[in-house]
Length: 113
Image (cartoon, rainbow, N blue to C red; front, side):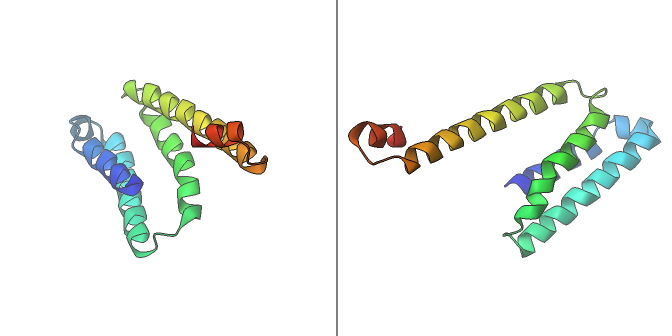
């Protein structure tokens, strides 16, 4: 689903009217679109490729950094994603802590929660 979303983002960027006006922007968006389509096809062949997805946020952050002046709403979306990712990691650590504890009533309730 993540690679499909990336392909959708890149194709939406390609359909942006700014691509027609700015050749440099069109070149960057085309390269991004090509990379996302390659990544999607690779993931269709090998869905267990976690290393590629580990690199995806770095690649996306680099590309979005260039587009941030053109699309200010991307900064908000990236910040929201980073916050959500931090929340997820915090909750994942809490879950692991409770899984390591003795299985008592309150611990089981926290695990379920």
